[in-house]
Length: 222
Image (cartoon, rainbow, N blue to C red; front, side, top):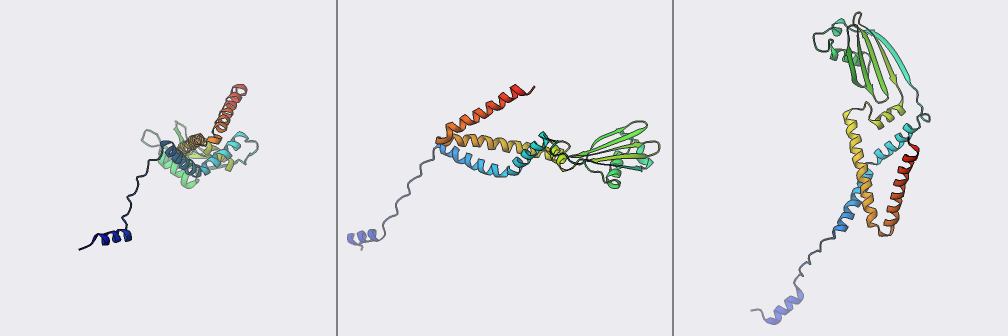
């Protein structure tokens, strides 16, 4: 039988573990600051390349004379099969066959942007950023004239900036980039609200620069 003194000695050697004190929930303001900081940092890093791209292309678009590239125009000629020029379908010609002819034989690039058929002629246009190709086919003889224009690297990135002839996937990239940049701006605005020593100065600066942009637009843009 364990005596009272033995029990006391056991308690001294093996004291009971204290129960953990429950953590008090963090204030909502602190939670907002933490989430905003996390979003701002990682969205900024994720959109770094996008910001740099649109910054550079904004400059090249605004000053085309500074970055004038070489335009390369090539004209080629050939003959299309008669079977492709007359077909019993709504297009009046073998649209797929003619497109594949120019892609395989002339190595035309870009997406098909226009296909027109009349009694005498078929016209086909291909477009891509910084690139155009236009073909005109005589339906009587099958002879065609192809004009291919390549505008260089600067024209390519300028068209990508505008989303011109870049397809649906690139259009989605522009949309996602716009969402990212909007979130970066908003999270930055939220963060400055929690930096007490810099909050007033930061908000005043943001307001002043916004008003300056509006004033410049009203005064100098017709």
